[in-house]
Amino acid sequence: REKHGAEASDGNAKFLAALEEVKLREMTILDLQKKISEGDAKLKQQQNMYEAVRSDRNLYSKNLIESQDEIAEMKRKFKIMTRQIEQLKEEIQQRDAALVKEHFEHMKVDKEKDQLRESLAAVQKQLEKAEKEELRFQSETTKLNQIINEAEVERLKQQKEYDIVVSERDILGTQLIKRNDELGQLYEKIKIQQSTLNRG
Image (cartoon, rainbow, N blue to C red):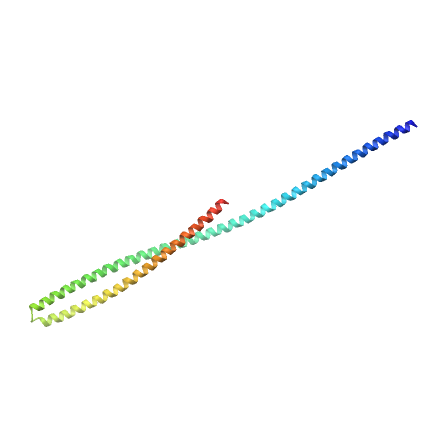
């Protein structure tokens, strides 16, 4: 009987020990499952962060491409405007040269007119000296007056053309100033865009 009691006591102790070991293993399993759950949560969070970063990167890449396209378009327009300004400068130079030529021609006409007037004075003086040649000199004087009138008409015509050319030059000058202002504003926008891109 004592032998069986000892065996029963020993078996009961082993059962209790085994039961305790089972509890410890269950607690270990629960702890591992908790760590696995935490790891899954961290992994999911990291995946969400990765997706967000990738989405931001794609958006920034798209914005960068759009900005580069816009800068390329601005450069193209700037090149066109520069070419137009150069053409306007050439046209203004040509018109200025034409105005100078007109001015010298006008001076030539004035000189010729003065010469004709001097000739008329000489003819009038000769009329006083020679009554016999009065009729001939009067006829010549009439011709000279006609020449003077024609020269005056031509001068007025050239003066009118000169005024028109000056007006056109002033208009072109105003347009050139406006173009230069627009070009300055466009250049400032390009610098702002470039500065924004450099800052990232």
